[in-house]
Image (tube, rainbow, N blue to C red):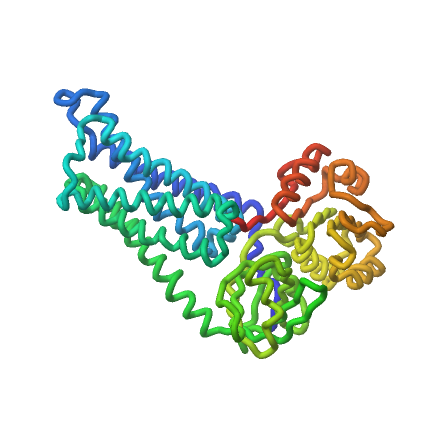
Amino acid sequence: MTAGVSTARCLSRGSRAIARVAWVLGAAALLGAVAWTGAASFAYDEVSVGAVQAWARTAGKVAGLLAGVMLMLQFGFSARLKPLDRTFGLDRLLRAHRLFGILTGVLASLHPVLLYGSGLHVLGTLSWSLWPELLGAGALTLLWVVLCTSLWAKFLELSYRGWWGVHQVVFIAAGVVVVHGLAIGSDLQRGWLPVLWLAISAGYVALFVWVKFLKPLSLRRHRFRVVSVEAISPDVHVVELTPPPGRGFSFLPGQCAFLTLHGQGLPAEEHPFTISSSPLDESGTVAFTIKASGDFTGRVGECAAGDWATVDGPYGLFSHAVRAPVGPLVMIAGGIGITPMISMLRSMAATGGRRPVTLIWGNREERDIVYRDELDGLVAAWPELTVHHVLSREPGWSGLTGHIDAAMLKLLLPPDRSAARVFLCGPAEMMHAVGRSLRTLGVPRRRIHTERFAL
């Protein structure tokens, strides 16, 4: 079996919309049930303590309960579950993971503030009898350590390994939260609340075992082999892999996968990269075009033919096959953000589909224009394909210079730009600026497709 297009991944727009509504309503119903059941279980007798104190205490306990449930639920956003990826796309799930993390931290912080602020709880003298409360304080501390190092990883100059190591603390925090909830007293012993709490905890444990143990074992049993490692520029390498015998690897053009290279001396780190080859490549190989931009990517060139790798994927909905199977396309790339565009262009060229495509690609220097000869060949054979190169740091460049802004886009975009589907990929700052410029020029937000994997 060779690499090919995964038709099962290409869900219709209507099917994705229905699935999204179902997932969101299901999550909202679960959180609503937890909040309602918790409020009913925690409600105080207002006659004996007063309405304000009772509701402050109840709100504090519900906030803690919701924080614990959300802490466990949000693991599903980052667990790369295929049903969720096919519905939302992995980049959206990771953004939801980030948002839920912040909200969880806020709710967890409100939990003790409301409880002790109600005046119905007094901590008293510190002793071992308060170990459930101390566990809760420890879990809250760990949660904020994870949040702060994630939100400000760049400011703290954390390496990927450092960030990843600290982020694993969240699993310890989740375990502590479960014990804290069960040990705090009789609050989780009423009605359906203990059933919900234990069911969600059991689901979390099952997902943890799958993600951390069973799935990695499966990936290692089905190893890819490195066919070649080619330097196509001073800081860009193409790593070409062959799938396990008899299994193949089906994907859509523009999708990504999580790659781990197991070469001698290389760190066994897992990183997301877009697949730059076409799923219709007759060789059946899978290629990743990787630019040196960190500790791991800077050592990709040390990998050699014969080394082995694990590939977890494919993921994402950033593909013309999903977002825009017909009609004109505009592709805007910054630097190595060209990789999904190359995959899509190669796929369209292989099928003979000659549709109007405008590619606008920004780089710093002329040497950064990888695949230049291939693009020139595609333009020569594809009359409706237009390629614009924009360089920002090349004094002798006779073409377009500067940055891709609204003025340049107004000049380069096709006349029917409001009807085209736009695929945008590059550095985060560039994507934000270009996206804003596109909307200023009348391109509807719903027609601008991006993909971001930064947490």
